[in-house]
Image (cartoon, rainbow, N blue to C red):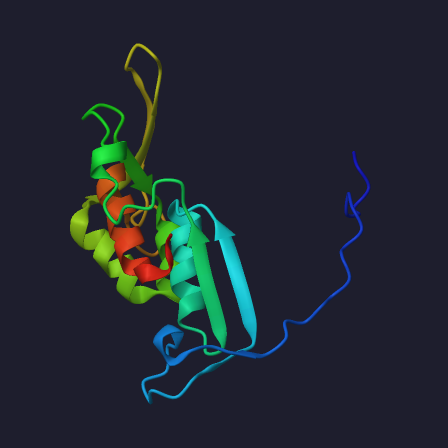
Length: 165
């Protein structure tokens, strides 16, 4: 058992300096330059990076750039998966977390997917070991969702806006 301590010392806290941006780069609707208090770079526009970018872009005074090797809005040409293995199961706890921070995005993910009512474990021969309904058996307050990976990634990147480069 490892002791409960960080592996590396935390870096010293350095707050971002306020800077003025040209009005073309502002998020403000008044046309006046917005003061940016913090600039954030995110490496990768996968699910986590794109969702984080979307949330941070909503914060006043934050400038976000999400760097992605394949920055196309649609991932279909690069990442389209074959039918087998292309599914993504979003469990109820993942959707509940997303609904807490971004109910609009969680709803859009549910809209493009199918309800995931149960969780099942099977042997490699296909014999079911157990199958449980999330809600009926008290495992969750809501059901999960099953979506195609590329549909979900395309949606999440589109919803992140133009900060992905």
